[in-house]
Length: 71
Image 1 (cartoon, one colour):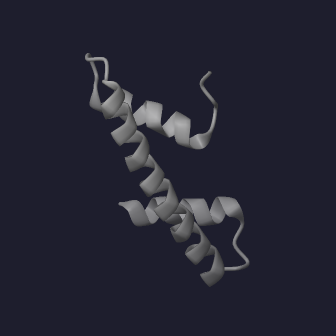
Image 2 (spheres, helix red, strand yellow):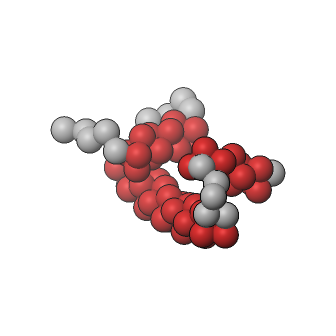
Image 3 (cartoon, helix red, strand yellow):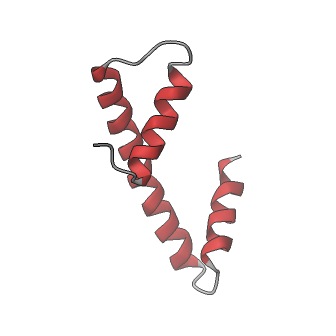
């Protein structure tokens, strides 16, 4: 059974992006999952940090600020 969590959806997106025409191995899927987990963990800290510095911002505003900082 495949769960529908943010981690699972992001892992699928990453493996699809990396393995365009080749089915990933179980080991590659596990590596992708760990990589996505690390990125999401870091992202959560970034969001909390942004929200603490700007407590009056909406969730949407914080997310948009994060998107701007990516580029």
